[in-house]
Length: 342
Image (cartoon, rainbow, N blue to C red; front, side, top):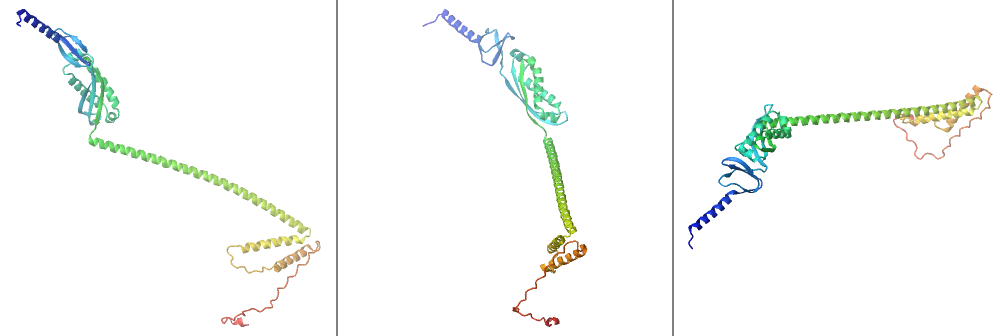
């Protein structure tokens, strides 16, 4: 089938219309924004979805990602306020809020944000001492975020956070800090040990004090009771002596005999129980004791005269029984003693 000229023109027009339609239809994915330029001038921003533009008159200028993005800040040398050199690296998170400003207010957006973040890291960390720098990382992050966010606002960018990843002081400085930390911990341990020793000594002194007080109170109570016992014993002795004296005054010679016999017996007991006495040679027969008591009674009669009743005569001592059986073994004369044969 041969086509005529009119048919060819229609087909060409249809193809042209289809090409124009495809050129004017723009699909924007979610999370992106497209800027539209008309003869090189920005006109509008396309939102995600299906959009129509004027073919051959308008074109897409910039395709911008409006999702939050991360930017790694490389390691850099920073000199602190106290002239300590440290190495620090960071990470920054930003998001495009205005696609037109991000596309036409700054060239090479990521490089601009990176250099701005590095400059502010040097500025913020250089204004702090090393100890403050190592211990106040949150404060550094807050200051960096505030400064960088204010600087990128004209670009239609929002910096959500800036985090310092690592701070590395020099090796010799790290060793010095380790020695300082060790010295601080040793000093703290010595202080705690000294405090413990002091508390222990205080507690021991308190215990010794309480023990001494209780011991003194016990000794005082014992001395009081001993004195009371001696007082009662002295009263009993005085009472017994008074009764004996009254009996003697009444002419009862048996009382003084009892009193003297009691003291004599006590004297014998004390002599026998003495630690330095090994052998005691003295008359221990009952007849000798009674003879002594009889002599004491005679002395009492001479003193008191016939005022009292004369005591009965003391009993005579019984003679020892004579042994009728001769000894089995006669004594052997001692050749070294000449008087032993007599």
